[in-house]
Image 1 (tube, rainbow, N blue to C red):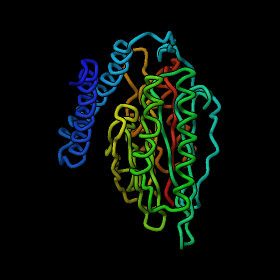
Image 2 (image 1 turned 90 degrees about the vertical axis):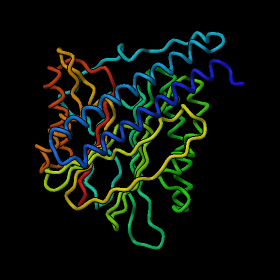
Image 3 (image 1 turned 60 degrees about the horizontal axis):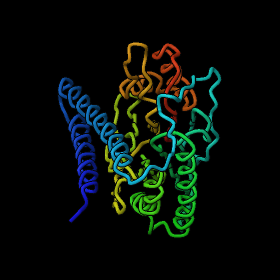
Length: 328
């Protein structure tokens, strides 16, 4: 018979999974809604489900520590104790891309200090004269030395997996990559009582198709038709580190020249103003649409200026990763 602590933790895991499923349902329903009123309502319900998921995930971490036999004496740096300002001069990151994608990204604060990470990978297509472009974005829950160490471990494991993928792309789709990586880092996540939100995608410029898989990561945004249409890559699943053997699934999205893809971590949509209102996804989308014709680095700048104005230059309490890619 399972121990009491295992039953309690399993209840929380199942609850988190239900919140993720509800989030997916509301978001997809909003996309097919013919009426603005119901679309807005469904989007709000989706945001509420995400908040519930985050609360449950934090509760899982707390309960697990309470139920753990013996105390390790580890000290965790609380999220509320981390603060920094958006700088006036944007520290753009240099990342690899392909001629078919114009790409710009920024990471705040420095990559070493936190658990957020973004990287790209260029991989030749066997037998063809084209390159695929992969996007890896993840956010480790919590702050401190242990989370930074976990980030480094994930990066190393991903490097090993992508070496395999570069030799035989057929064996590692994004879903297979996440499933394999999740198994390999499960114990590390358990050891530091932390979890990983991760998004991995591969862009095929010949087919104009994005194949992606998500482990509870904030859904990327695709803006099309001269900035008028918004598609959210809502298919997501359980965060890494909760379940030892989790099989993820591939999802697909077609794109056209001129489309803009936006990837981001929670730090972009969760800054709040003095009235304790969150910036939220809707303001990110609005800012991107208003500046759709600009270059990716200029869109990044406009979003950061928007966040700065919204918060009235209030210090942020979480790391921020923002990526803007335009399909050529």
